[in-house]
Length: 111
Ligand code: FES
Image 1 (cartoon, helix red, strand yellow):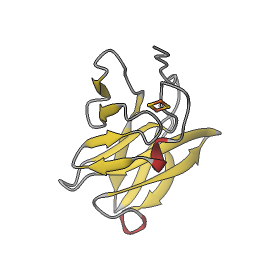
Image 2 (cartoon, helix red, strand yellow):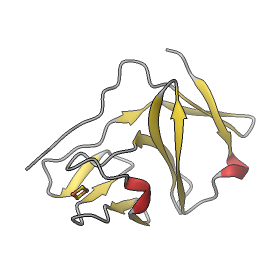
Image 3 (cartoon, rainbow, N blue to C red):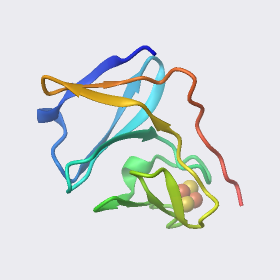
Image 4 (cartoon, rainbow, N blue to C red):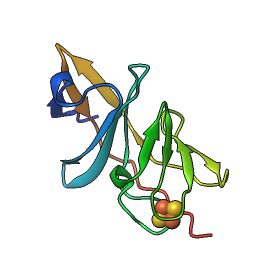
């Protein structure tokens, strides 16, 4: 495990999401309305459009391109339900957010 500092909680308020580069990997950090913090792959598994351009409602993220929907907390597709998002380990210490990208590969689902 190699957690790397990404940002502070002040940088990403609840209901927001933002892209960060962690160890050379593009990561989408999501802070849900309910206060859950998730680090997931930055690109949609469908056709690699940036998920940060989509819409976040609760823990549901809708890609702007073709409206695929994901539960970002679980990393599971809702529509289509076979799609998945890679989830990176995350931790918060003293209001600083750390993410570990080692050994986690982005998911793809091109149909
Ligand atoms: S690229 Fe995201 S739904 Fe098609």
